[in-house]
Amino acid sequence: MSNEQQGFGSLFVGFYAWVVTIFFGAILLDIVYASFLKDNLGATVRTTVFSDVSDVLLRIGVVTVLASIGAIATSRKSAAARNLLIASLFFVTLEFLIPVFFSPFSESVEKLNLGPLLRIVPTGLASILALVGLYNYTRQK
Image 1 (cartoon, rainbow, N blue to C red):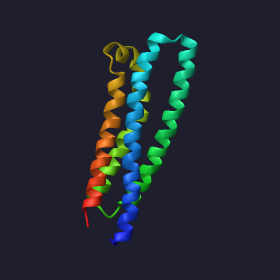
Image 2 (cartoon, rainbow, N blue to C red):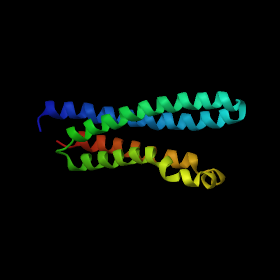
Image 3 (spheres, helix red, strand yellow):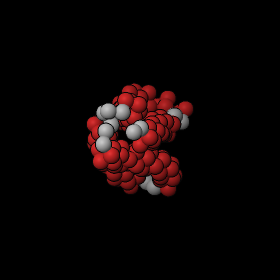
């Protein structure tokens, strides 16, 4: 792989690692913000605010998925980095699918206070895997 191709690929892989880390931070802020708003706002205002915040998170999530596809495509010749980026994309996708799987059990999830954990773990793992994938991609020659 030439230095120019590796530099171009590093740009995509680095951008994905950056975006997925921003997504993880946004999820953390959303969890803190939601717990703060539960106590301080009325139901109608809270619904509007949560809707606006979820729209922003969805936009960041779409950028994250698109960046991951670009990063995986540019790292196709580096098996270790590519596999880590695919695993990272899996966890990002899992974060979007968790509400679908756990909606029938929403009362028990709320009782056990597992909601924040079910959002933090997949995005945190996605971020870690993307950063390790970036390291592996830039390390290979």
